[in-house]
Amino acid sequence: MLDPDSRLGVRVREILRRCLRLVGGRSERDLEYDFVLRHVGKGNLQILDVGGVGSLLPLYLARKGHMVTVYDVRRYPETHPHLTVIKGDFLVNSLPDSAFDVVVMVSTIEHIGFGCYGDPLIDDGDRMAIQQVWRVLKGQGRLILTTPFTAQHRIYNGFERWYDIDRVTQLLVSSFHILVTEFWVPVLWFRGRCLKWTQATLEQAQQAESVYGYHATICLVAEKFL
Image 1 (spheres, helix red, strand yellow):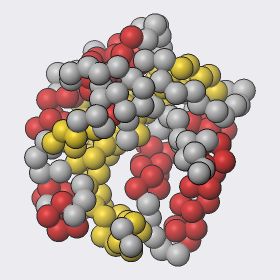
Image 2 (cartoon, rainbow, N blue to C red):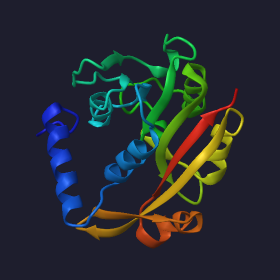
Image 3 (spheres, rainbow, N blue to C red):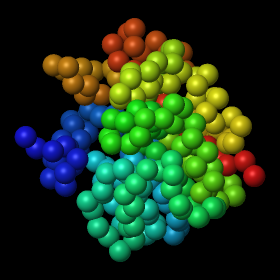
Image 4 (cartoon, rainbow, N blue to C red):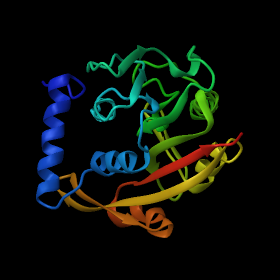
């Protein structure tokens, strides 16, 4: 069976993502990548991607001229002159303070602390991760984050959590100012696979699970408080 996080597996998934977009569909990763690329900014930025294994997004950003560091408990397989790879637990990282202009976390924060990718089991690992993000960001640096969203905070032990608006607010309010918030819901399904996501209001996102049988996605840009 093809490893979905191998170089070949990631490229096969990327081809499927692009084919789906050509016929008017949109995958969850498609909307997340677009969100990051719209908000990462221009210039030669220092970018940290936490949990980037299984994604070509860090490689895309490096090719755009940014200096990108990927930090993951698994080893990121791609190479590029502007790409640095660190394999390890982000919660105990030794990165310098105020080193990055942008931190990207695409569908990562919800898994931290659950041990599903070989990381340690830690209660409130997401809160600890946000503390580390704040530490490594430069003054007024930005966090770009995407994660599952639903009406009520929910934990799936051993894998992930789904966030509600209260948990998102509690996670960020003391350290960050939220600049941009988008909600997306899955609106088209075929044989158990979602073929299209569309932008939604907060209220529609909170109803997504009851209407579509699956979580919504929240995408955020937050600026570090000095």
